[in-house]
Structure formats: structure tokens, C-alpha cells
Image 1 (cartoon, helix red, strand yellow):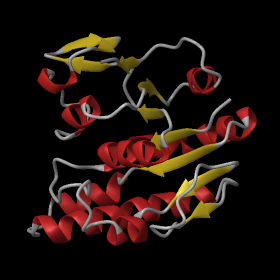
Image 2 (cartoon, rainbow, N blue to C red; image 1 turned 90 degrees about the vertical axis):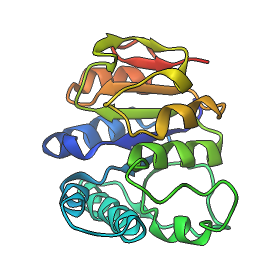
Image 3 (cartoon, one colour; image 1 turned 180 degrees about the horizontal axis):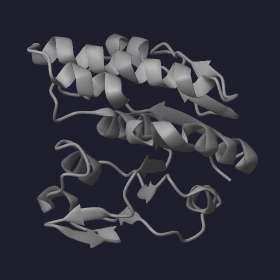
Image 4 (cartoon, rainbow, N blue to C red; image 1 turned 45 degrees about the vertical axis):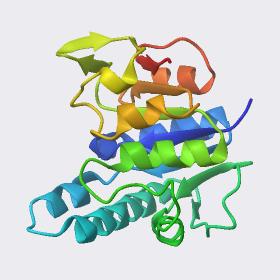
Length: 203
């Protein structure tokens, strides 16, 4: 089974230990991208420039990643020349890598339109791997209605992902699945590539 990039949302902080336990049990190679969580929420309340807020929020991702590592998966802090597909299970600390590639044409914008959602998609694309996003919702809502598939990402609107995500996803050949990480059985099934309640992005 090919590796997978997993975005583990900050809203799942109370469930983090049980989620990591499931990931370790399934043993599928993965790169876990931590959300920004409470740290990023705090940064939003400050009167900061987009530039400062962007990098501080990425550092908040690293703080959450270090918390996740307490449950038995090691952290990785890749350089721009050392990012490779995981052969085991790793937690990504993304700050240094994103700093090093920030001048490249495909670098992400520095604004609150880009959060750890789009950052996880960025890494999935860089590694040519599918992306599994764990949130605290069963499905993404488009125009207030839960959907199992998003087939027109560019023109779809949702508050459940950052504003940059859907148009960005439409431009990349990355399979994306979003599920509720509060349910260990769903996380396990998704990692085993079984059908599970959630939303898939299909072009």
C-alpha cells in the first residue's frame, strides 16, 4: 500500500492520542501534517501582518506536531533537498522546508486564506501521494449541505476548508479524502482504503 499524507486537524487535540494509536496499528507509511490548533487561533486574534501571521501559524503547527510525537511517532524536519516519500510513519515539522522553498513559483501565498489544510495539500503534491484530512466533521458542507463528493472544486464554496484549498486542489492531481477523525474505526478504514463516511474531491 502506498504511503499517504495525513492532515491531523488542531480541533482533534482531545482525540490525538487515540488517532495516533490507530495510525500506528494500521502501520501504513505516512507523513502526518499537524494543524495549527489553538496556537494558530491565538495568532488570528493579534494585529499582525499577513507575513508575520503566516510564519507564526506554521510554527504553531510545529508545536502541535511535537505534542503528537509524545504518542510514539518521530518528527521529521526536512530540508528542501531531503523531502522524500515516507517509508515509515513520521510527523512533519514544516517550517524550515517552507522557508527554503518560499521563493519558488509554487510557494503558497502568505495570508489566512492558506492554513494547514492547503499546506498539507502542498506536501501531498510534492510527494505525489494521496491526502487524508482528519477534521471534526462528518462531511464537507457546500452551500450549507453535506456532500460526499466535490466534483467542481473551483466553483464550490465551503467554510470547512481554507479559502485557498478547493481551487488549489482543482489544479493538482492529488486524491483528497476528508473524514471525521473522532471515530477510530473511520480512520482505520480510510487508511486501509475502504469506503468510509466523508467527502472526496473528484475532478
